[in-house]
Image (cartoon, rainbow, N blue to C red; front, side, top):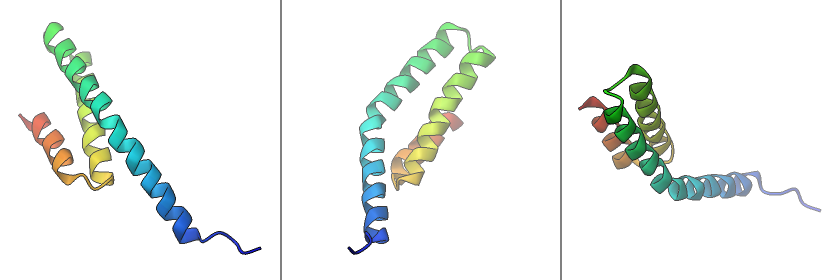
Length: 81
């Protein structure tokens, strides 16, 4: 029996992870909206700001990892303003 093609396995795994990331984007954006609202409701407390930053930073990094450079740049830009 022939061993599995490791390149094909890697490509399949990366494709699966990319699909999972893409499917997670709406929930990630919802989490950012909720965190922003919580931040406003809590008078921009350090804890709320840190939570918001964590969500935005996570989206920016993951988007960049999966080649979604516009989404990554948008997330980074939103944090800068």
